Length: 106
Image (cartoon, rainbow, N blue to C red; front, side):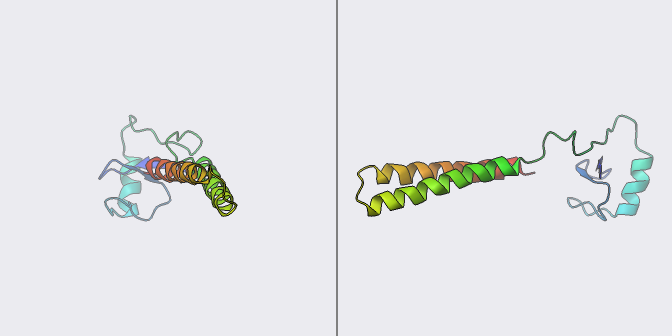
């Protein structure tokens, strides 16, 4: 699967898409336009696409934040004085992972 530029909205879409998800232009018109496109438009393979979201890394960050929150709750039940800080840190790390995953999407 390769990425092509939609001739209507110029956003990158899959060459296998039936319609452009952004402007809803039908695929038949896109394929004809892609065949007649100027050579300055370069299609990218997934290996070349450096803007694809790195979802696995952000999931790991969220997992670490969630684990810290659980550890903080267990420490809070055990009356530890640092439990609140661990819960707070876990929440910050988890939210950072959520924001990072959100920002890496298109």
